[in-house]
Length: 298
Length: 281
Image (cartoon, rainbow over all chains, first blue to last red; front, side, top):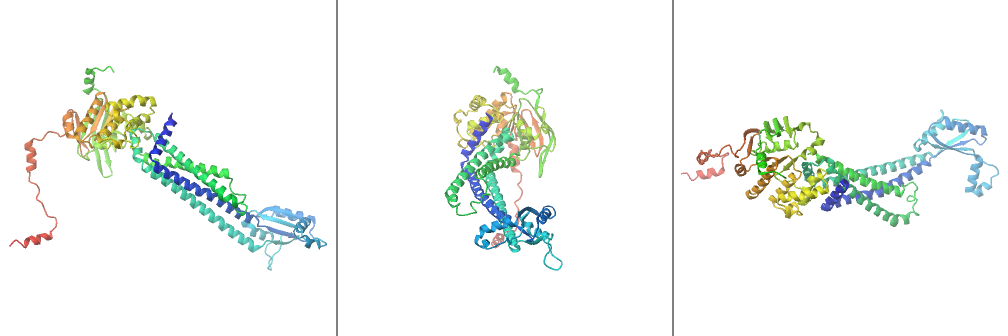
């Protein structure tokens, strides 16, 4: 009975204050729409950036006459002694040859013997540490040039310039999108809370009267909270519908042509919808409940 | 109800032995820029009808606002129905207010509810069921003469009718104490009488009524207890008083008017004076 009463109160005030209610709903709708577009975009960008960064490798080439003993020793060394090592992949001479043969069959058919060395492909624990890792494996020699930490290692290589460029560029991309996302979230919160406060302000006299008649804080608050939930849910649902229409009409036809759109790391659609709905309902309910506090002090 | 005429009369004459409903003990309320109430003590007993009079700023509204615990006194104690208001925690204030009916000069009705719903709200606040609303609201609206305006909104009513709604809302819970702050301040004399009759009728059911007012004609006609405030102090408390301490006779009033008025003085020299001087010779 109580809930029914509050619900009827909420519906009554919505129909009596149709214009402010519509404004509140519209602001939720616009915000959710923008967020719904932006979240996957941010994710796709950072996903792409991370993907590029994960390809940063340090190759450790052993000498061509390295024995299996040397291989195990270097392997142990990489695993235990050297800092910043993430993943170590061992590629033997035979594997390397097979790989290369696949790629350039004609060229390798001409060779009688295998010219390729045993290789460790070392992934750094963080892409940013790639250069440190290289320095650890091949410290600078006193007379210029570099030495290696093990006699069996011939050279340690990563294309230094490219690594640096990739690291800087992806960092900038990630920072910018992160900043944009933050600004957008702040803007949405401000927009929604202002709309709520405006519509409450127009009813502060009503709240004052209710208090004088002897209504408890929650008795006044519940209809407002329910109103917030209903408006938030309406706005959120409409926005999600629009997003789905947009996705089906605009995005899906393009998805095969752009790798970025097809990036597998973007958020799952159902999950995105759930988050957006929960956020719109939660923010508007909490917003109307909290904004009321100021007027309840009579 | 099996109340006889004698019962009503007995109740109407508030006996000095009746328990006090409102007790002010040396209550002082200071605002940031002055004093609202200065060391005021008085007692109102059950069933009394009290007028609180005094000019604007004398502290009438302060008394009212202290009574509904909208303000806290700076010092002194206020007891309503035996309870010290200082002991009521903030959370319990709504429950305390349900024991009071309050009528304001500006009616304070909920603008987007009908007459019926405005009155019903006071019941719903206390957790009144739909059955209770259906039983009590039409009754009280009939008592206040609003049966035909049930589904009107406040802005469709005249001032007098709005004030009737406000009285109906204040009384629908049958509170032991009814406060009215300038209930006739916005109304013409004709309508004011109707509202006062209503308050009087409510008083006769045993409810204590405190009315703050400027309406001298009404106070003089009703001859009830009068408490006069001036600059926050209680200057008069009479069992059957008039609005003014004593009627001024016509002669005295005439004398007051004949008293030489202060000479008009010019604050600054007017350029027109020179112009006048040109014609003096």
